[in-house]
Structures are given as C-alpha cells and as structure tokens.
Image (cartoon, rainbow, N blue to C red; front, side, top):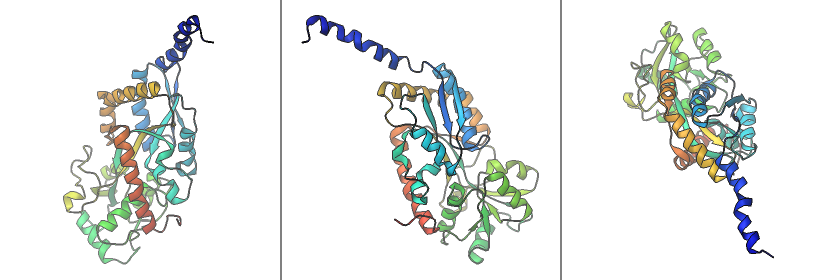
Length: 322
C-alpha cells in the first residue's frame, strides 16, 4: 500500500534518471562513418564534428566502419544502443539498399535527424576530348550508339551512376545510354579518364579540380542547382537548358528510439554546430554545400529520393525483382 511517505519519496526516486538524461552527454560520443577515411562522407563528418565537440563539450570520436557497399556502417548505426552515445553519417546509398537487393534496410531503419551537406555531380571529360562544352557532349551522346560513351566514378547503382542515368533520361535517352564501368571511387575513375579508358566522369567536380587545374581534364558542367563557389566559371546543366540536378548527400542519423530529452539536446547542439561560421566556411572552401533541413523535411526528402532512385535503378536493370 502506498502511504503518504511513499508518495513523497517518488520524485526523489525519479530524480536520478532525469538527471542522467539532462546530463547527456556525460562521456565521449561515437560517430560512425560507413565509408573510408578521406572520402566525401568522412570529410563532411570530420568538419561537422569539430563544431559538434564544441557544442557538446565532449570528445566526438569518428569511427570508419566500411564494407558491404555501405551496409556495414549503416547497420552499425541502426543497431547501436539508442542512448545518444552512438550516432553517424548516413549517405544516399542507404535509400537504395533494398532496391539493389543488398539488404532489407531503408530510411525507416534510422532516425533521420537532418541532412548536413551535399556535393553535386558533374560532367568531366579528358582534356583531349573533342567536346568543348556540355552541348557538344550531349550531341555526341545523342548521335552515338548506346554504350559508345563509357562513364565511371563509383560502383554500379551508386550515386554518380544515378547522376549519369538521370542526365541521360532528361536528354530523352535510355538510362543506360552511358555504359557504366564500375569503380572503387573517384580517384581511380579519374585516372582511367585521363588514360582514355572511359569517356566521362560524372562524380564530384571537387575531385576533378586539381586535374582540371593541371590541364588534364575539362569540367564541362555541374549538376547543382547553382554554380559552385570553387568553380565559378563552370555552368550548371540547368543554365544549358537541361532540367536536371543531382547531388550526393550526407546526413546526421542515429538509432531509432533515443530518449526524447536526449534527442532534443542532440538536435539543438547539432544545429548550432552546423551553423558555426568555421564549420560552414570549411565546407564551402572544399566545394561542399552545407544543408540543414531538420527531421521532418529530411524524412520527406529521403522517401522521395528512394522512389526516384528506384525508378532509375529499374531502368538500368539493377533493381531486384519485386
């Protein structure tokens, strides 16, 4: 039987639990990146983490969990304890795992907190190529036979492959008009481009910038909504009359079920970290576009992105049978 003395003690019994929630974080936070150190996801994360550490007043340890075309790292985030001490970077690939048959995993498996940044795709050709601008490249793509121009920049079905497929569809061509040569990343793809092994690189112009400066490749266009600050002379596809934009995106995600007080504190700290001038300047200085859209807008975006990607993957013959 609960007496008045027992009832009076209840707030005292609850207080330690509340104090623990209010005190978050009381120890270092682990931040999982599903891709290797040095890549786009890793770069975005490490810049953001510099601001997040200042806002949380705790170390934030970046851990790269690679493998399975991103499945390993994303699963590690989703399966971590939902206490706020393990969070991570989600990349566009997790929206396509199910469609590609890589894993029964999608946006609903993670707590989608906000996008952090985007990096637009581009159209880069070697310096000796006959195309001086995107209009010339587009004409060659239309006039040539299917597969006569090859492209690369990532594995089959990856972000830059979808960028090429969507561009071809907007030109009124087959999604696989550009024959895709799978690559482990932008660096080897660009070396293949310089050597004449492929015809176009549709990855980030940021990765091609040094080769462009050395006169070894030519960046014809970017697939962003606007020109890149680090490449002000390179036009967008939209400026050339093609209504197509594509950017790889990087997001703050967490395991589902984090206690509401901890999640609220995390979100507020993350938004302040993202808004710090030094964080935004470091991103922009590397050609990265800072984005903060919050949980609701990001959840809608991820769902729409997954639907658009699934259509392109089916047209490319890469989606598993439903």
